[in-house]
Length: 273
Picture (cartoon, rainbow, N blue to C red):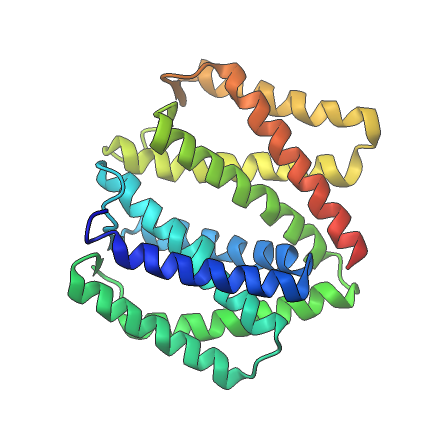
């Protein structure tokens, strides 16, 4: 294991232990709160990293700098920050704990900068403290709104996040590990940044279809959602936006089916909440 990778692994293991402990105590609530916490983090990361390149992660897992950078963001926005938020909220810890967690993450950020495995470009560490504390407070209010069941916005958006997170993760790992495909729309000259600008947009589109499929289409009619998704894949290939490499277009079918099942599972958890 490379020395640059070790701090990410250690932090990852600690947060996975925290996740297991939280799940043992709070069960299925963890899944719903994780979707609620990861979704906004992914949308935030799209702008600050994919679009504006305000900072860089350097875990040295992938040779390609863009894949390595986004993998570091995945660890941060899908594991470290949301797991900490989930534990803070489900164990009903006070705002002082939330502020302390935000300060802790800022100290970790400074340590990562010192070790040369993370770099701030236009980002600043005090942004981390301020925005992360606000993030913890916002997700706390979100969870209260979700449990109250008075506003359909919260369960519908949480379901949408379940789709968005899993499509985004699937697209990343299939591309980074298997080099299966790239999205190319010509937004920027760098083809990898272009991919990471387009892929989340397509994930959002598919997530809207998935959410509609879960909420509005009964039983056997859910196949319509799958057909629309697969038809969209074909359309992107025909338009030259989806560039297939080692995979063919039918590889997307099991991805759609898998994410649709996750969506249905999330819907069932929302009903039980």
